[in-house]
Image (cartoon, rainbow, N blue to C red; front, side):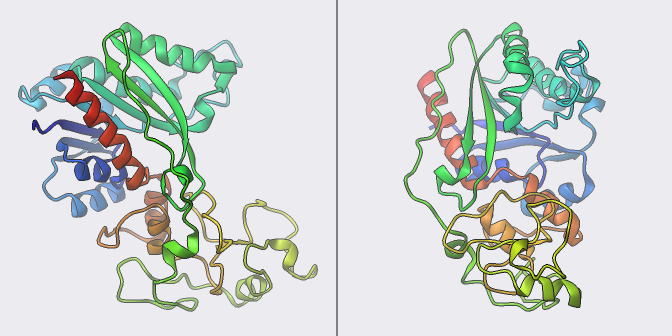
Length: 332
């Protein structure tokens, strides 16, 4: 059976790459600008050709030259789209907004390399942004370069990931019709306790010999505040005289041990372990994102949390990759 190829744009730490590798795809290139993400990617994918560069530095001619005639079956990636707040509000379309140029760069790679399929991941808000006009623009843009589009917001908890996380996946297939089928949802729900409870218990500031499983060093005041919060509880469990009066309501809460985790983001320092008096370690966060324990994250704790929080969970990436493979095999 033919081994299909892919390139990963805006690869981050490599959640999508990990899923596609597991599904038997061959990586031709990964592109990442952020140095800490690149270090993690390089460490975990030593055989991949990682390019640490701004995507805008690749001219059309250089893209073709760099590929040396290699065929690219699939392009994957999650270009940052930051222009939601003003696009459409001042007569400026999504495509025209300067801050969404990275989306156009992703589309340019698709146009130049002409893969059979692409997958673009992004925030859920993209689906209904500007009353659906933004998605219409995206579909039209890809239609103009020869791709038909299907898209869906997937919640990772429905795909055996122990976390509530909603992201949009836009899948393009070359040609007038799109035959991609999104992965089948699972009835199985995995709790955070099932995902991380076997890891060694740690106190605030304590380290372990497991990579990335080191506890944050909390202040005495923070430890006192969190000690009042019960499993699944929130800041209202803290005595009023100690309770933070303002700030994000998603902070000063404990994970509920019997349920999947809330969405992992780049800063989970004030969301506490369901039974231990501390925030989760980076390894625990990585487990919730379904990274295996032999996947090592490099950088300081803050950078690592961002790498984990921005990643596509590899378990979901694998399910998507398997369905892409079925589609590609049906086209042979």
